[in-house]
Length: 374
Image (cartoon, rainbow, N blue to C red):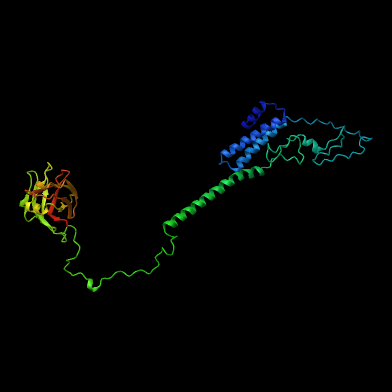
């Protein structure tokens, strides 16, 4: 006994199986359970769904046939033979086919053959079995009934069509939205007033009166070159290294290459700094003013480093601690100080540590200078 038949028979045992209305409710429940299972599994194909419905219909037909009354057997009575042993009877001819049966009569009322056949067919219950069993044509007792699957197929396809329409609609709206977004980003919807339809302007040309002389007096300064627009006061120059002090584990040496003269300083393992003097006369010019200091430097070839700068200007205070990353190109490293309006009383110093990470890297100092902000 398969699972479908077992489930239906178990349900019938829980009530009065002789009651046709009760059996119909059981059959309806079986089809409702199948419909729920098909809806919960959209991957089931139409052909598989039809086969499952036909299997339930076949089981219901088989079970219901057990509750139908049997058709009473009718014993035919053969009319008395005509006088004479062979009177009115044609001789048998051996043709390989059976001879036609003799005519017979039935006592009692005669029922049409179609009525007898219909009494053996499961009653049509549309709510139980969609595409009800066809009883228009007579069927022999015990003959299998054919179930038309057309409505099942239409029903399952009908459930899938809305999903397809929804998917197509969502996809179309998404494509339209993406197209509008890109159109707005690229300015397709700009009005004619916003679009620049004027002919392109000719590139600016230099008139003869605006020509810059070849002496380069007004040319922009190169990186690391002195800014001629400021009134710079020299604090240190490699031409006079006497105002530089290096501790015992630090080095300071005047050198020259294609970039010019410079003082190569290298802090010791203790992290000691090289000290540059700032004369008292320089500080007297800076008292009460806003000054900008400029250290022109670059790292040793192939050894980028980080330097730290500290200042001690005596009565005029200090500059705080500064830190700069120095690369391979000659560059300017600036810091500003607002000096109090008082007499300095003595000279000051600027201390430079060539390697903040204490790895012994060197720095080339080309110049230290200061200017007063207007």
